[in-house]
Length: 277
Image (cartoon, rainbow, N blue to C red):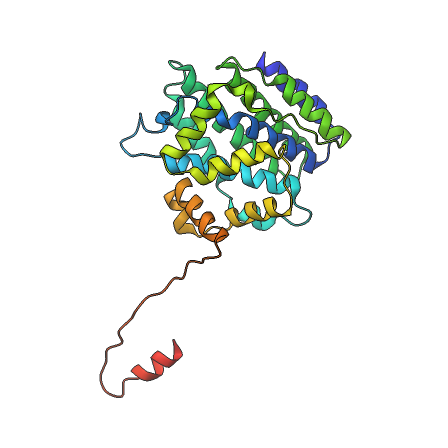
């Protein structure tokens, strides 16, 4: 059934612009992402490893989402955004693989794996700039993974995704954004984010639904800022990036400083070196 839906989506994407295709792929992941928290704790990213990868795996999915939004909404060259999230596809795919060991045994884990796969394919849709058929194919796979994830929790997202496509085609962009379709899953997702220090992401996501998935100039600038976060924050994961973004909103900045002591014989050039530095 899901495979048939993928073919249906791919046919309907024929003739759409690259930006429209990326917008659809982005909407797929926006709609399905709350399912990551359906168990309330992201435990599928801790159960099969000795280390806790929740922060880094969650960030990989979120960055794949951001780079796809950039491709959908940017009015110009988005090369820098791709470069900033070059590993988004591989990382999101890795996040999915990390769940796959439990996919056969637990529907919740299988759903999480499909969500991460949807993010990976959404990024692929954004990255395949050279060949229209390639990113349409990737976007269709994102839709396929989206409905598969929702199916595991008895949520049918097919009508919404088909409605999204029609709205994109007609340029209305009047997207359905009622969170009631998720039931307890929405609260579980928000609580799970708070439990691991990712309140920033929960608040941003809730606002995205309230705005009907519209991104104004401020929203797009926020995504651009997230894609240019310093490497040390990216390595720590989603909560660290969230804290960086909160400080950025408050007008603070991170200053990298170090103290050095220059030692050497008299006349060796210590003063000249210090002045040069």
